[in-house]
Length: 320
Image (cartoon, rainbow, N blue to C red; front, top):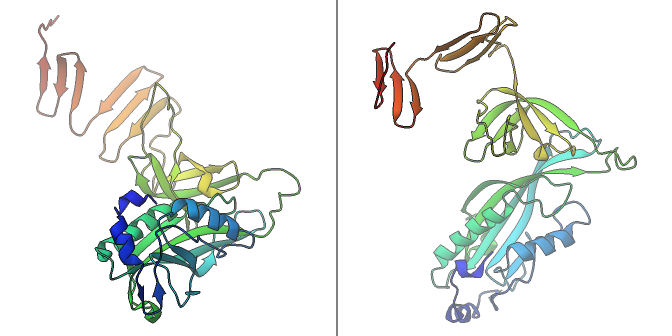
């Protein structure tokens, strides 16, 4: 977190050094980090990565180990629950782990109501898509951020609650001794599409993936664009054995959306609105059936075709 985001001046820091009912506030530097809320051995990683990500926090510890003397602003992290995750096929236990971070700010600080919201927003940014440089954790998925009024021991402060989840694999992988990297291929349905970043979220059984890029025909100097549809059946390829690092290839026909043709000599594309592009290789017939209009342009010349007629625009038109 960048200190200049909050413009906390020396005078404001001085105000924060006053002691109030069980809370001692000191200089504005990070003294803690996310700690052992993940599988054993990862607490050091959380400390190191948390120190990099949130340098403006005075305190960042496991909740509910709140000391009598609380150094604010503070972030207290709690592993609140976990449920069954998506089976990685490696004999590891997959868990979907839910985390809570409570952002605590001294209410006597100038603009404290603004500061606590800014800190909550920054914590949300940091945890989203973060893996904390650990191999057994999928990118974090931000859920929500809101005022938290349910911790009586923090009544003297302004508190916001940030929630997010991680997919975590625990135990030993069946592939660890062989040195072979597992590959996963899954079939699922597209449920969300991010057109700006060319990525989708896919439902595989009851599991909803993180955002995954889709494969296109060309993606260099020559580029193509044909975005997947919601509910389109696709394939996920995960060369590293982790769905969060997979790529998506569309598409597979299904009962809801069957093949639009059944002849080997015909190639066609059918769009949702009924527009159809069809080419018969046997007789060399290209047919374009458009619902709206067709526009052809070359420089300043154009042809526009609609149901009502054809418009020709050019400096010179020759009709033979």
